[in-house]
Image (cartoon, rainbow, N blue to C red; front, side, top):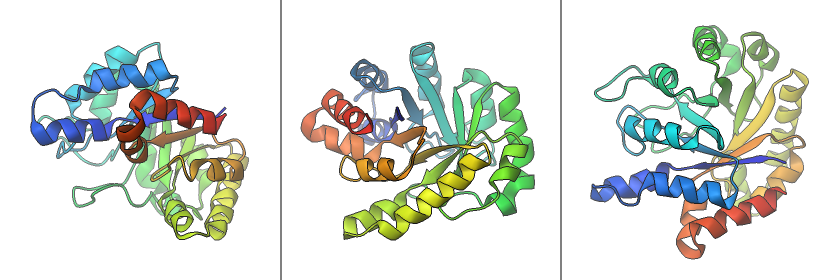
Length: 247
């Protein structure tokens, strides 16, 4: 079964908009775990617009031995204020997986992946550093990309497909072209020995179609849509809805 990792960033965004501690990210994490999710994702950024290093540490103690812990981020974004950098956070909390994303402060959300062919030598030392910490390494990529054998050779174990273009095409009524591209990319990665995750703008409406097109899909990371839908149906019920789709 494809693992559902719930991204908790939007819980932190809501909390940060008011200050204080509500909604409580630890309570949200426990609710998702009790509902049956297989993992939790956070994406701390140097500008700390949502999940903070303190949240990352709190969740590490709460999740250990219960579900997978996936930390996303740009490994080339250096320390800034209370943000120690992605590698240092991983050294502190030892997540199950790190997902390397080429994002910056100017992006509202992640909107593209690494080019493995172009970026492979730049990624090589940071992949080695995370592997040395015992983290599974996933790299955020676009559909249609190349370089999966080279990525496997430097220690990349998974890719995460950036599914924003698929979600947009699905909403417009015809995602067949995008699905074919995603399926082809996934198959080429899997043949190179790299497992496939996916995330970005996946929702209850479009997830089932995507999963059916990608045999062997290892994991989906879903945050914005899931938390938005939970405003209407409740967090526990929404997590269970996604698990039903994935099963």
